[in-house]
Image (cartoon, rainbow, N blue to C red; front, side, top):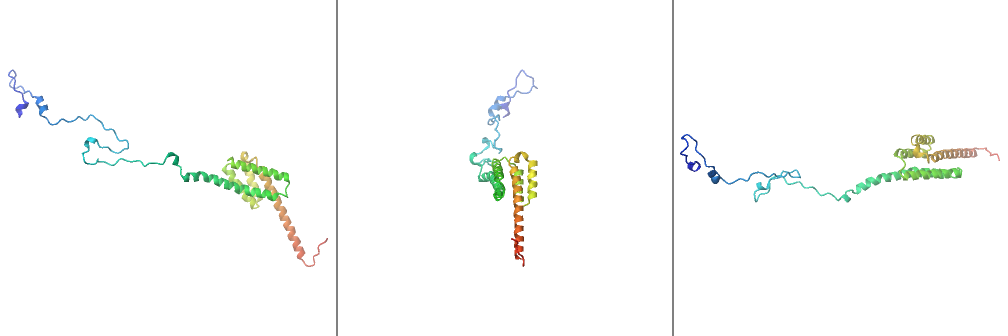
Length: 223
């Protein structure tokens, strides 16, 4: 076998010159040619390892984790569920409920003052309350103003006139730009309601005193 790879010696060369090898025979009798690795495999987009197709044996499933699949999401127009609608509408409902809790007692107090207060003054208070409602509905009142008005109405309903008047003054000092157009009517309503309550209390006192005098023995009313 060695004789196939070594060419016969050259008579003109010396006895100690190395023999010349025949490389052509080596390429002819060599094994199967290998394909040079000159191609690159692109990296997978989903992050999972990918096995080259040349390494996948026929009849065998590919080795490695399955590719990740993204769950289909809802269409863009249907992403906001009913909870979104409830979350956006609940502040509006709460604001309307608070507005009625404030304006309802104020309007009722104005009705109580009719017959005891001059008509011109009652009409002016009514116009101020209409401005209050319009600004409330139009979103021109801040949350602190709404909360303080709710406290003012509670004190007014409880006949705590001094406390209601203190809240009125604090609103005029801290939020004058918001309340200046209608707070004058609220102030007059507090004063008229206090005066009416004092008159009613005085009338009740006189009625009780008259009833006690009538029940006393030997009491005779002077004509």
